[in-house]
Amino acid sequence: MTDTAEHVLDALRDATRGTDYEGRLYLVGGFVRDKVMGLSSDKDDIDLVLEGDALALAHFLHERGVAQHFPVVYPRFGTAMVVVLGRDVELVTARVESYAADSRKPDSVKPGTITEDALRRDFTINTLLERLHTGEVIDPTAKAFDDLRDRIIRTPAEPRLTFTDDPLRMMRAVRFAARFGYAVESATWAAVLEAAPRLAIISRERIRDEFCKTLMTSRPTLGMELFRTSGLLAEFAPELLEMVGVTQNEFHAYPVWEHTMHALGRLPLEASLILRLSVLFHDIGKPRTRTEDEGARIHFYGHQDVGAQMARELMGRLKFSNDEISAVTRLVGEHMRIGEYKADWTDSAVRRLIRDLGPNLGDLFAIHRADVSALSDDHQDMSRAVSLRERIAEIESREDISRLTSPLDGRAIMKLFARPPGPWLGEIKDYLTNEVIEGRLAPDDTSRAADLAREKYGETTKPS
Image 1 (tube, rainbow, N blue to C red):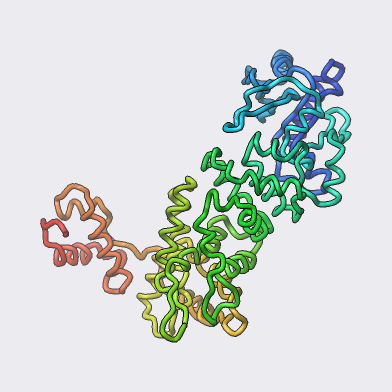
Image 2 (image 1 turned 180 degrees about the horizontal axis):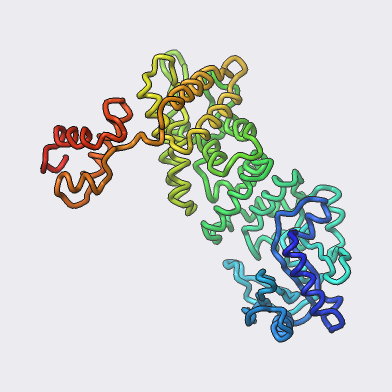
């Protein structure tokens, strides 16, 4: 926890010392778990639980001048949000909840004990509490310390009840297993297998976030395999399952799914989400393009283009941003380019590759490296990538690649043709950009660009 957060906790301790709240306030959540595990916590949230009225505590802190603004309260859940030293602090009344079978919103909420509150949480390892005033860590379920020792993900209550309360917890079980390298306890796993279809009531955005968090752990392949074998992957990304069992040609040591998992596992720990998604999706189009010729040789013609479209549809369904979708689909669609490089490529062909990938060019090389490393031993050849990198460096040493664009912007082109904006504008810009890439037009030669545009399209004729 940061120094700022510690100052907030000190302010809360000082405000409640000597009051009825002293000894009844507990820190809860990932911060306590990570502290016990000896990890540097990435959790900087401040969550406090108490046996008592959290709303009354919020107003008490406001009256004492500790909470800077009037509290935001949620009476139905017995929770409140206050701001202390500029930081949000969540105050939670220990409670008991019950849920209807077709909803993730509780239909009953009532005050409870610390132990009862712990039973409504997702996993035992997340039920540890730290007394605010003394720092003592307590285990209200009497299971958390044992499960940390035994490296187990287990629900504190009956697992079917836990997953009925919030089905997203099934994905969280996978994420924690992938993050810590823990095993999911057998009864908990059986409940996931049974309840996987219930994920349908969860918003696509929440599913996306949990999926991405799992992919960003240090064991993404473990996470993806657990998603697959649990039935969860079928609920939110069934396209990925099409890769399972699809055999490949002699260049590959593994079927498509296993190859993808090996490639994903070859990425460095610092790999970005865009890079991880691109590797996960890079061969997603292979099952739909698989053919065998008369000699029984296997081909996947155009799988990169089919895969890019599949990735676009999948990511759109999960509500990824347009920028994320654009970057991933570009990388999936272009992931064969480096392997196709030959020494006789013209400079303009290399410039076009640089232009097409833009800031994602480094990721394209990383995908190629991961892809090649998952091939059969006889075909793990990085020589083309090495040669292409050298070629790119040589071109960049004498040219400013960032200037590979039309010398005329949209405003200048509209003025030249005396026309309002429309699709025609992009057609002309693309034409002029291509002339720059081919070396037939200097990036700053606006006069020559205007002449070329007029020669190609005419002074006032709208391009087709």
